[in-house]
Image (cartoon, rainbow, N blue to C red; front, side):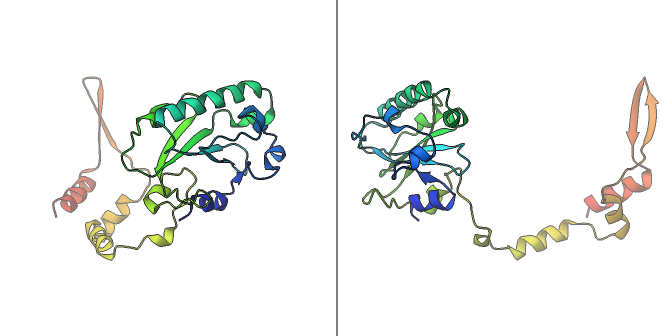
Length: 210
């Protein structure tokens, strides 16, 4: 699947395209100098509700820790400059660095660093940066990715095994339904001993011993 398509299906817009950033009241000049877009920046995606912002970054450019630190600094400055704007106030605690790498051998410990932004590292094919291909097991790491329920098949064998665990006695089934049960309360040494009726206890015991 294509990463950019996953963003689009979830209702995200890339504010690097055209004048979308102005529509969302975000000034890109506060992130980098005009016409000097960082090489590693592949996109900036904002949610339909304007409460999530993803910086899509190419993680193969430099050391992953240095990359995250440098973008944390950009995000920090950007947040300070725009701290009084409605758009940034809503996004302030929901900014994510989504870093795409082409190698399996990447130290992901930086994901535990929540300073200024969350970090998420996934593997992808970066040969075409406008159509980054990712595997299904990487896509499920995306917070907004929806897993289709038609991808799951019912295991009839497990359903049968679970059914066999249920009691067959009609009275016991009725007993197990959610309802209020009056318990027997006996006070011993200033402590109440609560228990079921003996007949109910025997029903449950018989079922468990089967």
